[in-house]
Amino acid sequence: MGCRANSAEVCVRAMVLLVEDDEDSRAIYGTVLRHAGFLVVEADDGEAAVESVRRHRPDIVVMDAGLPGMDGWDATAALKGDPETASVPILVLTVHSQPADLERAEAAGCDGYVVKPIDPASLAETVGRMIAETRAAGTRDVAGGAHTAGG
Image 1 (cartoon, helix red, strand yellow):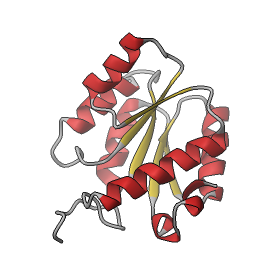
Image 2 (cartoon, helix red, strand yellow):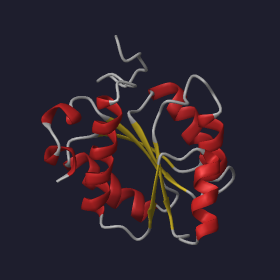
Image 3 (cartoon, one colour):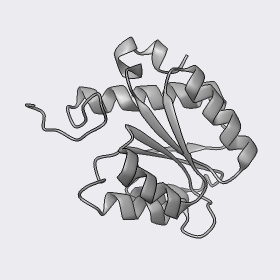
Image 4 (cartoon, one colour):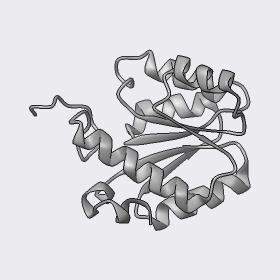
């Protein structure tokens, strides 16, 4: 389903940065997101994720929380703390589902939170919905750059 279920407009040049250290999971999620019509850029650790967001300006980041080196929580906090990247929505994927984990996600600045394992099609649907909501709010344009609601 993915962005096709929301509208064709969401798919237009919508770029997803998929940050996942597990190669098999990254391959599965990446394939499903591409099949749903998204452009997908991949990273396998937090440092690469931060650099990739700065370089590519994706429409959304799908961030694994448990990454080697700089984990997903710290990478999210770094991106949300930088005015140049703060508007990029971040959907965190994690195996942690306790209330303290949700609090940690909120503290880091996550825009969405899903617990693994997640059905890959559901992930694509969630990504499409989050991009559509962000665009409807007028905080990002089709090419992924930030803009004001009036422009």
